Amino acid sequence: MPLPKNNTPFSRGAVRCQRETWCAFLFEALMARLGPEGTLAVPTFTYSTTKPGGIFHLEATPSEVGPFSEHVRRRPEARRSLHPIFSLAAVGRLAATIVDECGAAAFGQESPWQRLSNNGGRVVTLGTAFERSATYAHHMEHCFGSPHRFHKIVDIPVYREGERVEGYWLAYLRYLSIDVGPSLGRLAERLRREGVMRSVGWNGKISEAVDIADMDRIGYAMLRKDPWAFASRRANMHITENIPADGPCGSAEVDLRINVSASRIDNA
Image (cartoon, rainbow, N blue to C red; front, side):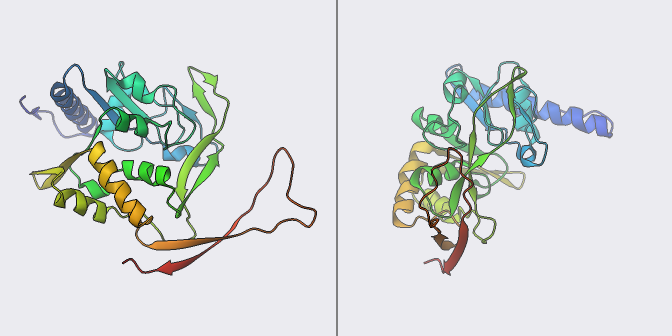
């Protein structure tokens, strides 16, 4: 498949046009490689919905994680999972299987990520190293129960086909009050050392691919040994709970406030 040529004069509009041309070229190349039985899924995350007044429209809210993901989302045959922050768009034979009627949580057993695992998916990074772009690792942390993250109910209005979708949504987030961020270097090193991750360089950039089955096998083994295996440092969470003098609150709705402290331990 020949690379698209750039014969347009330089301008803002021309840059947008050329970007769309390259996204279309990449999409066609990937779908040709996947074939009629394959499925392409991309993240279409929307972090801005968490700001005051944020709203998520399934069909209209644009992806905020790159022009290619937005190109895929906007294709007429694309389907998108219903989550106000961590949605995915998919095209192909199993698109509906992966993204339709998912659970309220961003990750976990009823999420598109688990369905990718169930259906023999592969993580591919284009132009960037695995450790900089593998969100699937957060799904693994969610399923394992890594202690440096927590489930937060996000109150974001969600609309599908113009109608409000009632319900709640869960996001698996890190504590902002402590300096524990994602760090996938050790996982990437293990995947490369065991020969299950393919890497290729082009024009000074690296692209990598690994089967999710291998990520699950190696990643969960690492988490069993060290629950902070995908984190920048370890943090033992100590949650202080003050029980009211008259006993636990039995109201239908409860305002629960938790005080969090952390004692750091150097990574082994």
